[in-house]
Length: 343
Image (cartoon, rainbow, N blue to C red; front, side, top):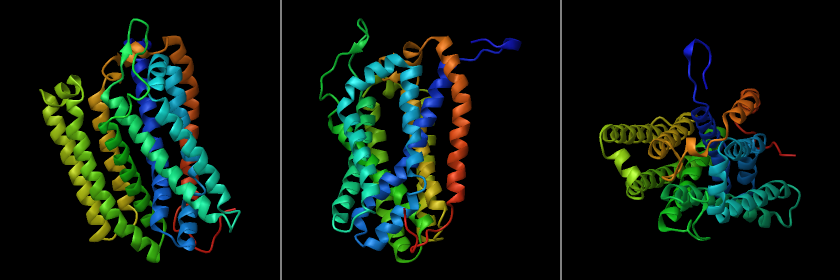
């Protein structure tokens, strides 16, 4: 699209970055409270679980806004990609949505009963674990490629094509990463014995996450020739070294903040940075494909007029969402009062 003064703007690229931003915002914001849900299993005391849940009670609903924005944006801006990806990933996506629903019900019901509290706590833990694993499996299945019949512009694979060793590894990797985010979030939001326990747990989850980053990074180039050529030829080699070095540096700073300096806020911010670097690496590997390596963002894009119409709405809604999200986190900043309750 051409604006005045000879400026050309590719709306398809803008929408690709908007959807990528929405997905990253969801992964970070809902990732730490999914990780917190899995960490319930390692904090059996009722008082600790109440404090953990109170730390996300004011913001957890809003965190999932970005999932809606990412999915809705994909449907609106890249309808062909939506039509190809969903049939390929129906099973993990349905499992994720059911887990999120079950987890949301458990979040509310555990406060309303004493007799069945253990049942709802288990539902909260299992729902968080299933949602996290399903997201990782969906990511792995997308990275390994989707069979596409470009003649009919439809999905050509089978029902269980998403289930592979690589997708299972990425599923477990996302679970570990979310637990790292959850542990560092609780280091920031809690005090006393619970904080010390989460500080200790952040170490093994950080090491496991770092190990999975290495495994997935080394495995991914061999999934598709396009990935291999991107990372191991020309400027890709230098970029791979740069991203890898940045990951190691941020991980070192995070572990240092946890143990040597015993910072409270920095480990969480450094864990987010670790996720951001992984996200950048994935973006570089996949670009410019929205369905690797079959369909580019331009192949899947909606008509230009549709993109312009939607961009007007996004220009209003995204700053609004960012504003109320930031305001909510600012209002509920600081430590959690162990004697406060969620109502």
